[in-house]
Image: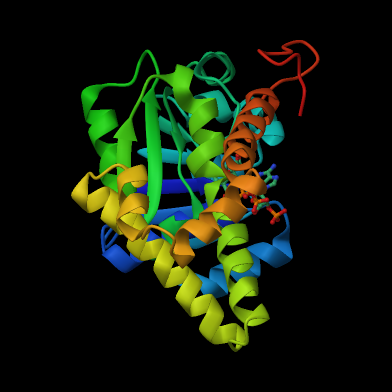
Amino acid sequence: MSRHLTVLGCGTMGRAILGGLHADGVADGWTVRATVRHADRAARLARDLGWVTVSTDNLEAARGADVVVLATKPQIARGVLTADGMEDALRDTLVVSLCAGVRLSQLEAWAPSARHIRAMPNTPALIREGMTVLSPGSAATSDDLALAESIFAAVGRVRVLDEIHLDAVTGLSGSGPAFASVIVDALADGGVMMGLPRDVATELAAQTLQGTARMVLQTDIHPAALRDQVTTPAGCTIAGLFMMEEGRVRSTMARTVQEAATVAAGLGCGPDDPGPTGGRR
Ligand SMILES: NC(=O)c1ccc[n+]([C@@H]2O[C@H](COP(=O)([O-])OP(=O)(O)OC[C@H]3O[C@@H](n4cnc5c(N)ncnc54)[C@H](OP(=O)(O)O)[C@@H]3O)[C@@H](O)[C@H]2O)c1
């Protein structure tokens, strides 16, 4: 069915989603608009995404849209949604906010004429390997949720969870590509240290993480059981695992997610709404 989709604030995440949608063909025949703040970036984006109409005019881009994806930084969301004329432009529109830490109650207060869904995607959406969690607001219909699911299913896996989990989701899968990249790079460093060329070491590290991740997803075997399958008594793998334990890698990774989730919870807060972490960023 022909749709009108608008991405307000089309930076890293907006581009990843549009790129994935285009590759999947889901948006074929859709009218797609996007906005950014700077005119020169709008011109560049228009060149890069020839199938998308790009401007710096949020109001014009939002008018008549079936779905508006709000992909600005969280601190900008309120200003965009409460701009003069936006309430009319968003009347009966589905707004899907990607803004970390901006709660449904805030979205519903800032744009009361729209229906809202929060989404927490991640950047592998660009290659259609994303992970998105959706949380519907009080006015969102089952059709709205189905539409949002179809958009994000085109760029990876989708789950629907209660909003209470979204800060944890942000700290795990939203920020996760950065954490996983550090692991890939660190493993590759080890290979380089032992004489492998950098490109070979990076390929081996990335494919090993990808293969292991796919085994977890496709076999449903617990990661600890997969680890044990590789661990021969008195062998090299248990020696390596001892080094990981000495470096407290597991508690460091778990704490990494905890810290990211805590900061995420404060990203949508202002002085009048300190949120669950007292506005800590
Ligand atoms: N990056 C991630 O991995 C990730 C993952 C999950 C969720 N998210 C969420 O996705 C959102 C976007 O993150 P991002 O990393 O994509 O940020 P980003 O790359 O900085 O993109 C933000 C975009 O917003 C535009 N913008 C700024 N002010 C605007 C305004 N008043 N009107 C319209 N556009 C405006 C910027 O335009 P200019 O380029 O012209 O300044 C830029 O293109 C955030 O809320 C974040 O919480 C991000």
